[in-house]
Image (cartoon, rainbow, N blue to C red; front, top):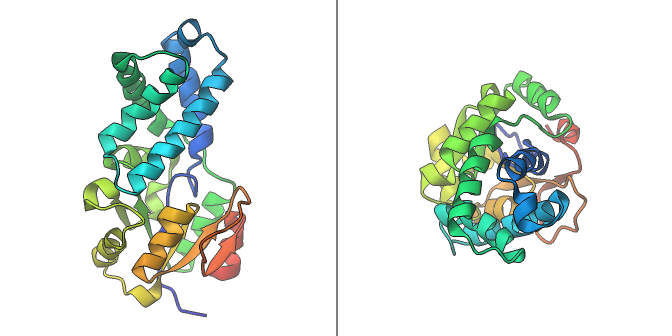
Length: 232
């Protein structure tokens, strides 16, 4: 087994439970904007359509087809279009409030703190590589209490690159003063995290929270974060 020293984590969907936090946030936004009177549908219907468009647009962002600003408001725009509402001002208003509230949420996956405490006590250097936005990701880290665990935090916005491009991984290695053969990527996204690590020649741990069929080879696979103790 390799002697890893630098562990690079993804944040959203790996440690910080984006879906749960987004649902709480959207519940508030939905109420504040009286969307039930505009879309004439249940919140759950609205939320499921939002999740779909959010995933599609994040995939496009990963592949460099859209920029961060487009992602932020067009996921709301596309969701509203499903309810035959073509209102750019409303979409941008929803987006602004969503992004203000979302980072204040604190829900993380089970065993997150236990795993990070364990790894810290074993003197691993813990870092983040995230395709999220600089201000938003730092706010999530601080509000959830995760910030104390990480030495270097690399966002796509600050690095001017995006997972799965190898450049963001190379930037992260340089920033931490880490060697490739002593580093490993830990994340839930097969394209951004696991394929990204492959592109950079880095080992990886696929965090398969939702038990999907893997289409990209990873060095290790876990189904919950407590299993990281079996690897490290």
